Image 1 (spheres, helix red, strand yellow):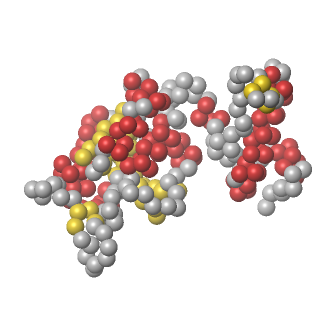
Image 2: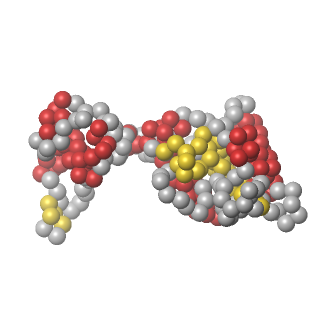
Image 3: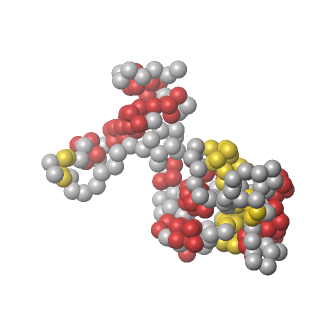
Length: 250
């Protein structure tokens, strides 16, 4: 799978894309990254990419021309690599659709994705209308630009690309994959500072371990993110278990 990031500040994202699981996935040929400098497509002699907004107001707005040209260039490169298939273009913005695990899994089915990282007060609306297919937000807050959100999304999406994780089932067992938070994890030693690993995890009884983990997942979700329970796929046994802690499905 190919990820292409259009940015004014590639240094903000390079480190993240060349570390840990992402680096291993790239080295294995399962995912690939390219960073395109938007300034390279500016016609201004000083490579300027922004100006004051029409109508007044604070901040600067990015020109449409470098955006459109850089996206067209990225699409052309990826199209040649992927048998003519056009890429979805994701613009990171606070007013976009909230990013979540389900979206990450869906986007992982694409052969390539282009991420457009805005800066300053944003991008000329005409460029967005001409190029963007998906508007995505990583949360109800504002950051300096789209680079860090793009890195976060690429990390989450890559985990659903087959082979990127050594154990492909990991992506489907972690928090949010089934609408719940993940259960607690333990490793050696069995006793640390007087705290013991739960006996059931040492028993080797897989059915009991599975039941324990499910119940712990439900309790953790109830404690930290109870709103998730309303839309989670809960069994009759789950509902009975949660009712014992005072929770009932709305």
